[in-house]
Amino acid sequence: MIEYKNVTFRHKSGTVALKEINLKIGEGELLAIVGTNGAGKTTLIRHLNGLLKPSSGNVYVFGIDTKKATVSTLSKRVGMVFQNSDHQLFSNTVEEEITFGLKNFGYDYVKAKERAETMMRFFGLTALKDRAPLTLSGGEKKRVCMAAVLAWEPEVLVLDEPTVGQDFINKKKLYQAIVETNAAGRTVIIVTHDVEFIWPLQPRILVMSSGRIVRDGRASDIFVDEGLLRSANLIMPQLAEISNRIGMAPAALDINQLLEVKDNWLRI
Amino acid sequence: MTAVIEFKDFSFIYEGEKEAAVKHISFSVEKGDILLIAGISGSGKSTILRAMNGLIPHMYNGVYEGEVLIEGKSVLDTPMNELSRSIGFVFQNPENQIFAFSVERDVAFGLENQGFSSEEIRERVAWATGMLGISDLRKMAPFELSDGQKQRTAIAGVLALKPNILILDEPTSLLDPLTAKETLALISDLNKELGLTCIIVEHRLELAAPIANKMLVISKGEVRNFGRLKDVIVDPVIYLSGISIPPLIELQKALGIDDVRLTIDSFIREIVHR
Image 1 (cartoon, helix red, strand yellow):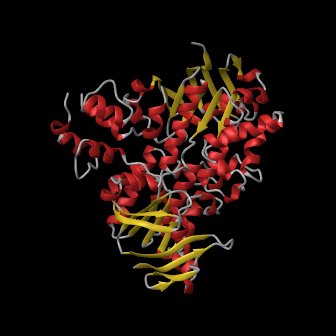
Image 2 (image 1 turned 90 degrees about the horizontal axis):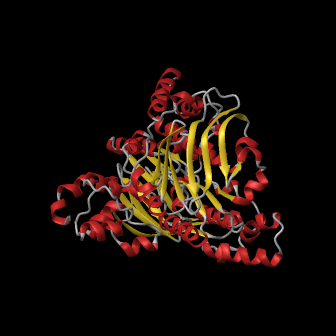
Image 3 (image 1 turned 60 degrees about the vertical axis):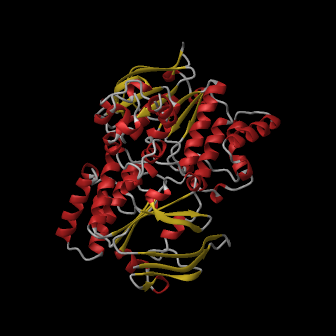
């Protein structure tokens, strides 16, 4: 459904940000992209809605060559929540921000308003609906962006560092939104450093370094590989590390799985 | 021990607001403490930090009640420039902090402002950039840096001033995990070596808890618990305040361990294999 064929991307300055990327992402996949700052993660996902076009090679989204499509056609199907919310927000109020995309993509006024209200309730934004998005806190802005994109249910949801600045409650809601979106058969792609957050989701993981994909595999394999994690500036999720240290495989996804077998490892 | 930061029944209402942002806040931080402040967005964390570095009341108007003392001096009566000699502040977003044409000029900026000799400036810039692992970026322009490198530049600029108190407002939220862990380890080293008192706001408790000794939980503008981190982190009030605790701590709570270990190493060594 999404395919990168020999994609190289060179910035105007000449810096090569992506090097010969070959990648296929299937419909309904849950994918997390990890790697150091500057590894090319954000550059990679910006090719998905045509914001960036390959210097050489091609990106196909639903069979459409992104070089031949406009950002607006792709954006309807590929919803993207940027790392920096300020690049995304432009409306006068939170409510307008959320209804904007909906109206643009053909929802009538009443339906758009209804849908926006549901999203605002879910993300705890109802009380802020008349506020100017750019005056909100970082965490609130991020939730507005998230609500605005999730509102029109794009077939592919791309989240760039969604947990930054989010507290426990909002991370849980975000987690729930990801699970539900993915369960509905839609593709979710997350760029993140937050290994604790993605560990229980057990996504397919791409590890990027210096513009290349250096590993592509399951979370259960990648997050227990110490050398690989170190090379990508990651640390092992706590549950994976505890499991590893007590010799439990496959690693526990929650503490209950550790507690169930505690007689095997706890010597008090 | 003498308190270097003391909040005495402090309340603050921002100008134009009806409700107090924080109410009856009392706690004290001693020299060499690392205090972890935890609370959800909008709980009052930023207000507490602003009351420490003097932005409240010197830049934000409002109704100020109670007292905040920094190294024995009331913030209310101490001008910002005097407070800034005691307190270094690292913002959540380094974009708000760095602006010079090169990393080294940026790190030197505060020092130049305070009239240090050029030799002292060179030495301190070399020391601070070295400490943050950005020595080889010294000639680079901020726009060429990744977000993580920008944050390290911002921290280096504050460290270079060698403050007695370092306030860090979610300092690692843009760093990759290993860099975040290393940055916090560095803060812990500075704390040990220099007796630097640190105040950290951080959502990722799994990274911050191992280096802190005190913890303050704030919710809806009020202190829910304050004290030794090991005692506070297991208090159920933490969930009610919307804060998640790391799996390692949750596991130990479920096992009924009172004296929780804060690192996986000590947990394995002292609990699993004892």
